[in-house]
Length: 117
Image (cartoon, rainbow, N blue to C red; front, side, top):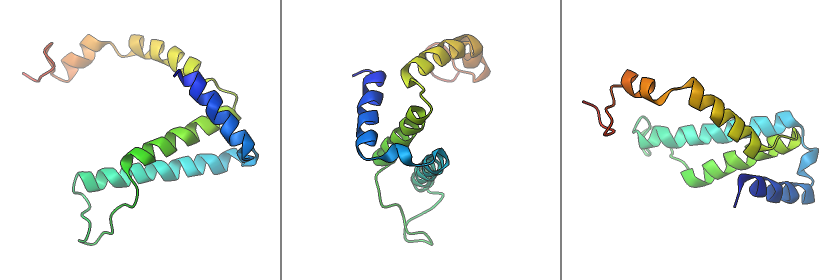
């Protein structure tokens, strides 16, 4: 399935539920909240926070948090009439020119085999 198809399917989903009546700032704030939950998961993964030692842990799966972020980002794009697939394609072409692979690999000390020397 193409991203444009996913976005259209989600647009129909949110239209049927009346979610396009929410303010964009509400959806954006919810998006930031969900990004924070991804950050919380990462803090536990990296043992910066440890469940049971001063912290309670996280209730949902990291996979669900990513999906929620994606859905809210799509909702904002729909509210702004932005075709995410086209926007991504355009930005990706810019990024390929802006961030040359060879210069980045050299700057990070990565050889052609993908490992560090």
